Every structure is written in C-alpha cells, then in structure tokens.
Length: 172
Image 1 (cartoon, rainbow, N blue to C red):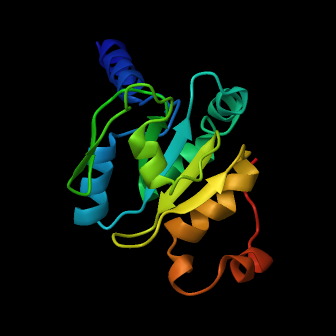
Image 2: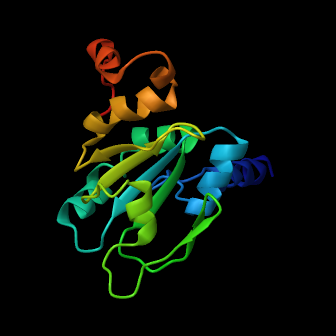
Image 3: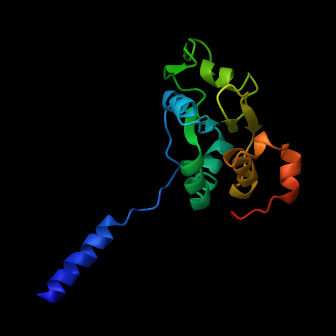
C-alpha cells in the first residue's frame, strides 16, 4: 500500500512539472499596450516576415534561448508581429491595417518610424518614450545587453555605450 501511495505521489510530481517554454509568451499589440500602460512593463516587438531568412534563423536560434525566454517573459510584454500580415491592430487610439496594394502593414511602419528591415527588434521602454529600433539578426549573446539595458531600467540612468563598457554577457 505504501508503494502505491509513493507511486501516486511521484506520478503527480511528474505531471505537475511544467515543460520549458519554446518561445517567449507572445501577446497581441493591444495586450502589450495595455501592459505598458497598466503594469509599466516595457514592450518588445519582434518584427518579421515569412520570407525573411534571417528572421527564420533568429526564430530558430535566438528566440528559443532558455535564458532569453525566461528573461523576456519576466521583464517585457513581447509581441511577434508579421510586417506583411493583414491583422487589424489597435494602438494608441488608432487603427492600423495592411493597405490594399501595399506589402508592409501600417502598424509596422508606424512603430518603426518607417525605418524597417527584417528582422527588426523594437523596444518601447515606457509609455511616452520613443521606440528604440534595433535592426538585423541578433544572437542570444548580442541581444542580452539590449534586453538587460531596458529590462533593468539602466536606460533611465546612463547611455547605452557606458552601460556596455561594464556589461558581462552570461547567455550563450
């Protein structure tokens, strides 16, 4: 009888164990804006297209890093946004769509200030602060200082170059 109770206890522990996340917890732009305004959490946008080889590589290598996933889920509202998708987006009391005859979604152009390449990382550190645009492919080690600069609030105290001088990478 004790061995059956032990087996049940062990099985319960196994099924309660949560599998590691495969990607950050992506939310809609609307949910991210709400989190930005109500929880004062920075927002990070992963802007991509379906045809972009560098976007696919970043999706496969960077966005699957366990350290990155854990950190982004804790510190940011994360949005994965297809710049050529046709979803209606509501942001800052405006509506954005993919205009007929255009290849790029109006929201991707708006949030990037028209400076868009693929992939592009965009961070809004706080409500009312201009989006910070980081174009191009980034490895987990390259994206780590960027995320920690904004996620830990260093952007409020010092410029990025000063922060980088003393930053020590810990992600692969």
